[in-house]
Amino acid sequence: MNRHASWLMAAVFAGLAGCSSGNPPAESAAATSDRGVGARIFRGNCIGCHQSSGFGIPGLYPSLAGSPVVLGDPVPLALWVVKGRRPPGMPVGRFPAVMPKFVWLKPEDVAALLTYLRAEFGNSAAPVTAASVTQALNE
Image 1: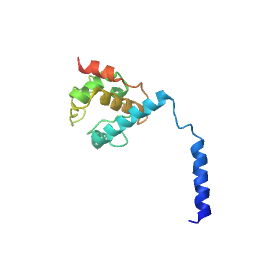
Image 2: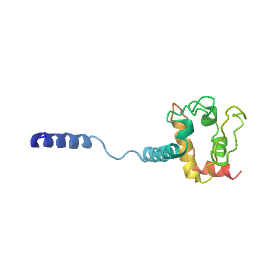
Image 3: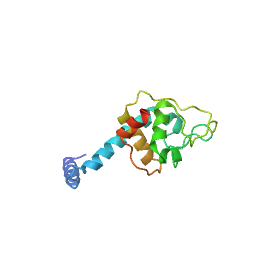
């Protein structure tokens, strides 16, 4: 690349960088951070069964997309993820696989994961707080 083209590209990128304030609103930054943590936990622990699409493997692992368990009350979902307690809405025998217990996750991490699940794969449900997860796990 010649010197003039390099300078032109640098000027264009500098101009584009100036178009953004670089500082999203605090609420947006927090939500983005939580979704990032939730996505990281999902990729490290859940993707093998539920797949990157969130659709699971039919007849073996349940879909997270449009799931009443994911979109409903987050307490049963938190108890299933951490303690392996199957939610009432998921009948025994529907899927042959057993959900592993993720007992090492902190309430903040569980909240981030559940918030991610409730906002991804076409889902749209309220975020989950660490306080609500803590309360659920102490039941």
